[in-house]
Length: 336
Image (cartoon, helix red, strand yellow):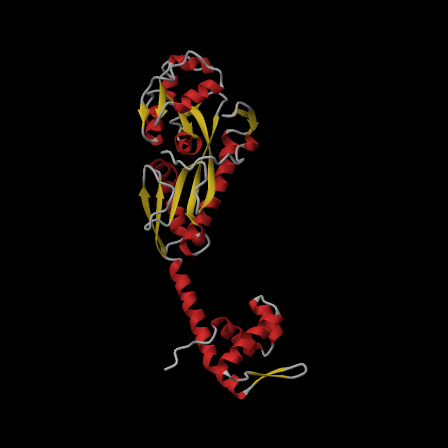
């Protein structure tokens, strides 16, 4: 039995031309030139050894063989289209696995999942909290939240939130009576550190502070631990603007002074490039990007509007620049 198949692209062109009885309309439908349609039809006729069309001055007719062939294959193309639609429909449902830092999961995503679940009841979300990613998505992860500078080759990255570090403390600490009216008053208090003492060192250097104990104070492995320690009056934290927002809104933490430190890091939504606009991954991306965009506007308007802040580049910027892009010069993904 001859198992050779005709050129599939030529077959697709023939189906369209036979359905429209027009090379011009087939070209428009397939986004090719009329010459390309003629070429594909010629190659199919040569393969079959049969004429499929009768060309007249201003009309196109199917030969008897062409008409018989068209009626045989048109149902095949319809079946392929229906099967494709069913497959795409299934890809919009099912389980969606999200990998992200524990702090972002606790402070941002988990409190908002009810909104996504209500909008997309056919998608079951699986949360996978990890301390550190290596810059590549493992097989069982659909999308991820990375913290870093945004350059991870081979992956689609969408910036969610630029990082601003805010000096924060508990109202309990303010009630103890130690002064906290100026940056110099930090010397009277314990500083709380996230992963290392780098952030407080940078903050002190950029604000020309001396005499504050940046080399002392407890170090925590996660941002939520720092925020919880500060909320319990154990010291002053440099809190990430997004992660600290729930504690600020609840009144457990209070922003201090009029300075924030803008770092080169941000939170990014990450997935494989080829999957970014398909199925449940696209559904989740659209939801998360829209939600983050709306909330970013609210945060900036309500908490930092009309103030100038000190950046890590030793210059003042207005709040309208808080959403500007930062440089991408590292692939390391620190823990947050």
